[in-house]
Length: 128
Image 1 (cartoon, one colour):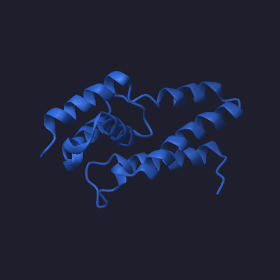
Image 2 (cartoon, helix red, strand yellow; image 1 turned 135 degrees about the horizontal axis):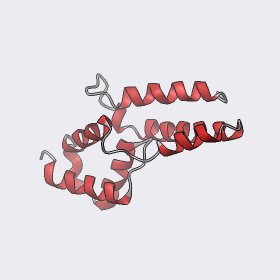
Image 3 (tube, one colour; image 1 turned 180 degrees about the vertical axis):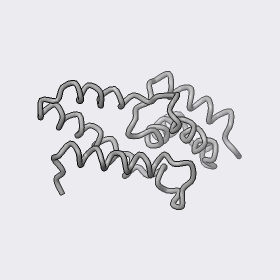
């Protein structure tokens, strides 16, 4: 399948983000899925690329700004809850924790500072 319309990509992005960052899940694997994380990141990048190709540069800039993880957004608390609930956290090394957090945050990208703060949060708050 090749989706090339920005509106279709935006609808798919919205559906994935709403499914991934809702308060409770019937399928708890959704927020932890590397496949969904990769797909959602690629969709967001494709939205920006498609808008640029269509000459909609202001829209592309707006969507590009969404890539950065916003700590004031409700999904940030979801990410912290998922970290808190991760039983295998104590068995992870720093690189595994970093990669795990990137999956949880996707399609949004945590800054190095946010990544470090989320690792510290996990180290302090994870249920054993």
